[in-house]
Length: 282
Image (tube, rainbow, N blue to C red):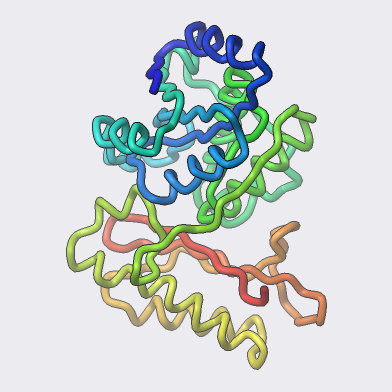
């Protein structure tokens, strides 16, 4: 595996592959890799000749400085995992490489799906995400990029950026990878205490309960069911839960036969914020 830290070297290497007609798959990450990331690398390997993974903790997408400071860093372990997975290239740029003019973000036309849920709770978050993803796309110039469905709203927003800017890249998604007890794999899981880790699977269980009750309950009843589960759990504090249309992100109120419904949730468990989602009627 080639490990590169500067844009020039990465572009030089990729140009040699592209000149030979090789297809490029790209998996952008912030490190602290887990099975969810490796699943995306594996998807990319099935589609593409060469797979690039990036590790860059992007400061502009953190609206909480404590969250940025505490974000887990496991570079040696990450490199080992990617080598085992037979990833071709790891790109680990510095802040100066990624933000040569300082930590500034750009504005993007996102059809207002950046204004709700994560967007309303984390002001500026998606500006930071879109800025760094657009920058990485322009550097790697991959054929495909891969994102996890756990960050469902982020995935939708990145698809919107690609569409609105007519970027020459196709976005593919990987289903949420879960622990045996249902907890969605996340880099932040490592920050949970032993007791918190035992409580955390309740998030997924509450979503599953709503899914099973979908046919016989209103949206209001389904939301209340999830809210009650979280409020009754020791140490959990609900940040938001909403049942929305997965394309428009508009909240669903009255059921119709053709509804597509996905529940999205964010919960604080101690100081750690966890997100998850589940399609309720697929």
